[in-house]
Each structure stands twice: as C-alpha cells, then as structure tokens.
Length: 187
Image 1: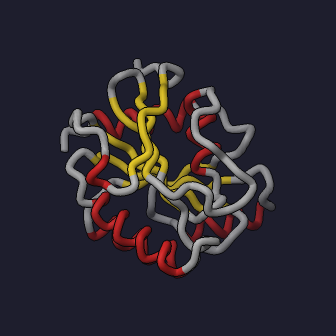
Image 2: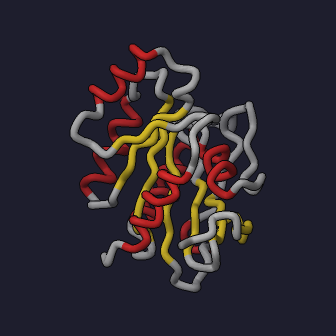
C-alpha cells in the first residue's frame, strides 16, 4: 500500500527538461487556474505541500511532489487565466505540450469545477490528452458548493468518461487508489 502521507516537495521545473531524472512514474494534475489542483494534492497527502491561493494563476512551473519514494504527483500551472499576459499562455502551451510526451507520465487528473460548463480550452485539452492516449480521470471539484442540477449536468456532459466527484468533505482514499492504479498500469 502506498503511503501518500510520506510525501515531500522536490522541485519546481520551469519546463519538462528540468524534471527529476530518476525515471519515476508521474501523475499530473491539470485544469484551469483556481480549480483546486494544489488543494487536492494537499488533501491527498494530508499536508500543506502545494501552495494554494485564492488568486488565480499563481502556479507557474511544474511542481514535483515525491510520494512514498515511489512516484511523483505533478502540479501543473492552470490555464484560462493569467495575470502575466498572453506570453505566459504561450509558454504554458509549449511547456505542457512537451510534458505530455513524457514517457514517465502514467496518468492525468483533469480537474474541472463542477459548477461550471467545460470551456473550449477544457475540451481542447481533453481531446489532446485522448489523442495522446494519456489515461485521464476527470475530477469534478468543488462539488460541495454545486447544486445537484449542476452535478447532474456535469455528469451528463462527461458521460462515458471516467469521472469522480471531489470536495473539501471528500475522503481521499478512492482517489488515492485511482492514482495507484495509474502507477501500476504496465504501459
């Protein structure tokens, strides 16, 4: 059994080329700015490892967190908002395009706010991950703040895809197991 509490921050990489070179498997968290990527990593590890902010666009690098000396959770920058301008959007696109061709990447947690409709950016990224055959789990965040009708609509939009709900009240064991399943995959 993987001990997610045995977790530590390793480094922030401005691009894929600066990642840890130990060959360990990786699971990346992607989604719009302020969707809850860092918060979810903190919940999974039961620590405040990843910096979470109420202001969108704070994460600018690929942040690597070593889990039980076995694999990495990777917190990626958000998209769809940046206070730094369109050049940052271009840099994000290039950084993530290179990252998604990473042979150590074994899975993706694609976070989407359960109260919002998927944006064009969400759809394009989801299609891109599918075209690259990156195993992806859609995590509908902030479900504790959503109306039942919003959750039902989100589930309908993503019907046929792998979806899980997450909120501040969510017990992370199921999500931890799903991450371990990515890592155990023989690909």
